[in-house]
Image (cartoon, rainbow, N blue to C red):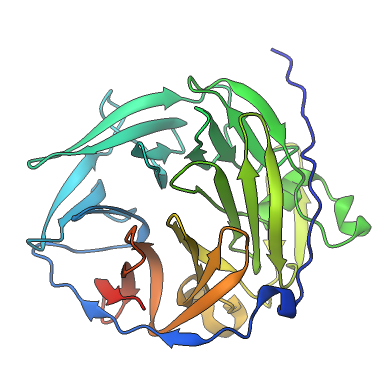
Length: 340
């Protein structure tokens, strides 16, 4: 099937610090460690909260997820890793909307529904995205019975696919500092501007946060398009594109300030875990964050939470009252804090 790549009609809004409201009050976060029976966290890269049920994705564990009962502080392992019909290969991301929650397997290119019961967590494969580019690494559902994918594509930023995984179109253009950078092939720019996407609980908004540089974008979503509402761009990364017939990469400058390490959303807010450190300064600790910036869905900064604990990932309760995080204390531990 011949696919026509359509450009997204975007106007980049280069926000100054005054537009970003970087002068908002900083609020300290006080975490407590939750002592969960038999929970050992290796390297967490995602969390999903539904009521008193919490899933933690851990790419160092023998299963996909740790399932934590927050009422009783107990845990079990769920999600068999393997190549069988009910097994999975690679966690991409969680998603949660008003009507479903699930996760994306980036190697299988498949979304699965997550259902909780008293005795078990049911993982059910639902949509296979055979028409998506094999490099696609995250997927988010929308209110229009479609899904949005993101990956280092040869052209474009987002893929829009229908309910059975058939590509509708590819939209957008990778960021660029100036016309000189714009001449770099989009595939190389995509490797330099990798990030996260999450849709709102209602499925009509999208946030896209870059982790290689402090950049975050806010969109409205329709059945066939994605429209930029606002963007907060503090700096662009320095990198060297490396493309040949057999590989694609962008070598990042170790002096670059990293951006956003994780996202969590509610009806009211977008919570973005911010690093702001370079690997030259902080080494691997730069890929954690102790600051959570809170935006509204129009992309206006509302508040900033600060902590003395480095976090790798987190989630927020739908009422915006409680945060759960995986943070480095003595080891990686499950943490809880009440929000103002």
